[in-house]
Amino acid sequence: MIPTASMADIAFLLIIFFMVTTQFHVDRTNVALPNSAYREEVPKGSAYVVIHEDPPNSRNWAYKFSNGDDMSQPVPDLSGMEIEVSNVAATDPTKPFVIKAEGITPYQLIDDVIDMLRRAGVEEIVLLTEQRTVQN
Image (cartoon, rainbow, N blue to C red; front, top):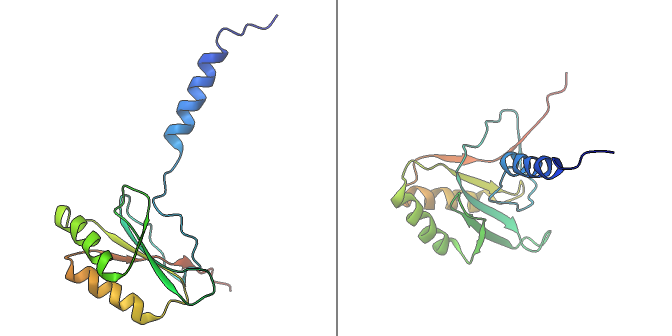
């Protein structure tokens, strides 16, 4: 006979283990990131500004925002984004902001977002990229 008294304890320990080790992502927007030869890790708790095509392959650009604690939410335009960013930057001016944009995003849109972040008082801006593998 197999003793089953400790099976519940083992099950709860496994549940706790998976809850503790699971990583929470505040933005799951699927974008084709631009490539770069150098890449750093994004600081934990960073706020996200996302520029993506909506719908895909339409050349219609949409924005999403996450303060780093909550899931990203759609924002109607850049002025609405500036209000959200200003609220976060006012409470924590050292919070890093990550710009996550499609590789085909027009540079003017990215430049407008960087200007908006600077106006809102953001001190650290990170551009999210995909690391390119170097072949010899």
